[in-house]
Image (cartoon, rainbow, N blue to C red; front, side):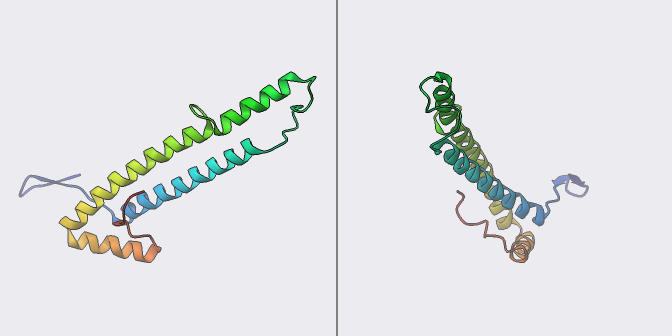
Length: 132
């Protein structure tokens, strides 16, 4: 932050590329979270685990498989539930960031033009679209 001596206003330098990069990073993170959820579901849904779950003499095999399945896709502290909460938080941060960005773009047309330029060069999605 810099102090503007003539008006005693605080000035914050905001790099348009960093704004675009933050949103892009959130999108990348959301895609990774989705992939983790799919993988956890696939793992939980596999038919055979090779832990003796089909052998009645190995009671613990079926118990371990049941616990792993619950951890993959159950409720509470499962991988799916935790990743869903992570996605909700990231989407909320992204939405708040977009509100700030949109207001800055309305207040400063020159900065808005630089943001649009950075996004077009990077092939970035329009951040003015509705948040997830």
